Image (cartoon, rainbow, N blue to C red):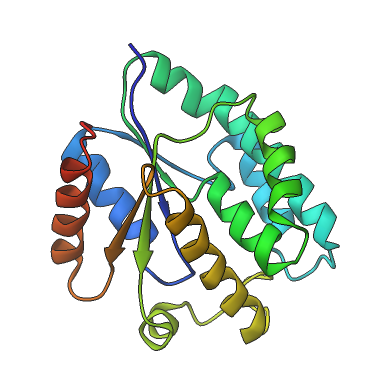
Length: 200
């Protein structure tokens, strides 16, 4: 019996990494991230996020898909096949939002690329953590990576893209208020997942 694959999604600074760690302990889940959830993925993450590299938008999308394919083969797939719950800090939905909407590459083109990379195996549920831009910005690190340095218009397109994805597929998307304390947000996620009928 395959395990449950839960992806935490949303803009930078909304608390995905913190919540992934909390939920991993609560559910005894495998906690991972994209990009960078494997040894090879960490190298890809360094290239994708380093300000040293002036990557084109298509190159960025291709590197993200390459990381995702390897991540599924090395980390996510084996865990799911063993019946484990997997909590991922970002997933394929981030590519739809960031490269499809934000970079303007087209959602369907990015979806097709990643469906091939994942061999059709997508997360079971996406939790969209929604946080006001001002609060998210306050949570950001002092030194920003290459993507975090993008202009406000890019992030507005990404945010709108996440909402559109969630509204188009309510069966697989859960929208959760990410403001407030860490434990409070965790409780909201747990309640939303349970209410939707998913059992980690």
